[in-house]
Image (cartoon, rainbow, N blue to C red; front, top):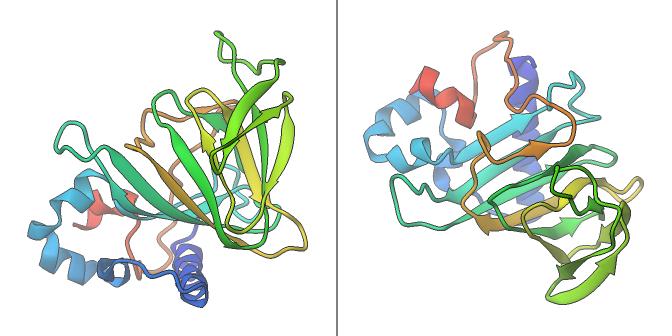
Amino acid sequence: MKRSDINQLINNSIVFFDSMNFKLPLWAYWNPEQWKENKDSCQEVFDNMLGWDLTDFGSGDFNKQGLILFTIRNGNPIRDQKKYAEKIMIVEENQETPMHFHWNKMEDIINRGGGNLMMELYSSDKEENFSQDDFQVKIDGVVKTLKAGETISLKPGESICLEQGIYHRFYGEPGKGKVLVGEVSSVNDDNTDNRFKSPVGRFPEIIEDEKPVHLLVSDYPNYV
């Protein structure tokens, strides 16, 4: 992806977060120079991969298959005692996050506002394939039985709890607008705990056609 496109996507995201009255940490708006000035006090941010994150999952078409998110808080079993994580995401209409599950992470996916979030769900078998059995999830604490591959709609204010091994893909419902999506979970590790049904790329290769306005989590080693 081009850095110019990434810069524009982050700027557009800031505008959307503000329109939804969702406030980010102050360092979300730092430029690379400010990161360098404050690096000695920000080790948790670097170690736990907090901040701006963006991927096209290797598709080359972010609008069709992609996700922009901001990790607000996250633990790191090696370095601290924090056992939880929180993200905020923006999902566009028909913009897919592809089918995957997590081996270790348990998470609540929350529609914080905007349009409707569509989620296609399967349980998995011992070989990590789709199970064709019915299975149960909890939507805001209420048990719901789903059929394999069933698609549900999360409206603003609704959330779903996804246990380990539950395959899910999601996208914004067409015609309803972009969705502000929250995630509250156990510790998040995007390097080792994502089991995509089909192989995808997680962190994009960046064409540096201009300087970064705000850093991605994948930028920290190179810029800070």
